[in-house]
Structures are given as C-alpha cells and as structure tokens.
Length: 158
Ligand SMILES: [Zn+2]
Image 1 (cartoon, protein in one colour):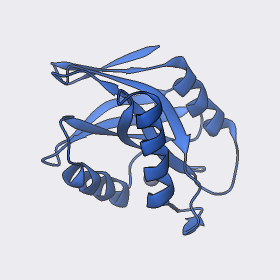
Image 2: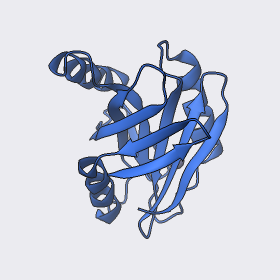
Image 3: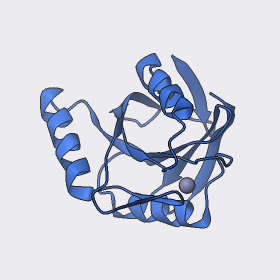
Image 4: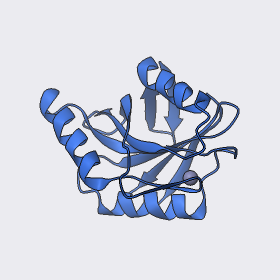
C-alpha cells in the first residue's frame, strides 16, 4: 500500500494490486499509448481516497503513439459493473495512461482533459485523479478539484 498526501487535509492510498498493474503497464514496451480508468473508494469527509484498481479501457476510436482517447461507453460499463458488484462502495476516481518513451509529465491536452472531466463529474467526491506512467518506472500523480485546481501529488519512481 502506498500513501501520499493531497494537500494538508487528505490522503491518497493505492493498493498493491493497482501499484503492480501500473508497473506492468510500465514494463510493456508497446509502441502505442494505453490507458483507462481509476477505481476506488473515498470516505464521507473526503479525507481519504483509496485506489483499489486501475482498468485498461481499449479504445475502438483512436489509438496512436501520441494520444490515447478512451471509449466512454466501455468505461461507463466498467464503472457501473464495479459499482453494483461492490454495493456502491467502489466508484470512478479518475484517469490513467502511459507515455511511451517520454517522461510522465502531463501534456497541455492531458491537463485540459482531466480538468474538463473534473468539472463535468457530478458527485460528492472532492477530487478526480490523473496518473501518468512514463519511461523508467516514472509515475506522475495529480488531483484535480471541481474548480479546475490542479495539485501534483507525486512525481518519481513507482
Ligand atoms: Zn499524456
């Protein structure tokens, strides 16, 4: 289990299952980027978030070495399934994708996409998260608030 601070008042925890998946995707040297959704739990006062799993969402729309656009309908299906199976405790927490042969630094598009998702997401959770997996086991984790405020939580080796 990994634990990171989100500002002063909240923590983000990542279960080992999800950490191992991040590492696996890091080691796959596909020429295409891939990505998907982050699933997990959060408590009522939004002081603790727990990432329980990351799911790959294969896009039927477009997949190129420079951009990954996930399929919304497939992603929504996974979210709905997990929500039902977990009696409403596991929910959508954000997005992840790989950067092939480059650092895990969010592009301008990455930032605007996650900010748009944060603004559109209706719910009681305070944050959505973006995780980028780059080369050499580098990961970048950030949180985005509904007002678009962007916080870097971690940038370093997995
Ligand atoms: Zn990116």
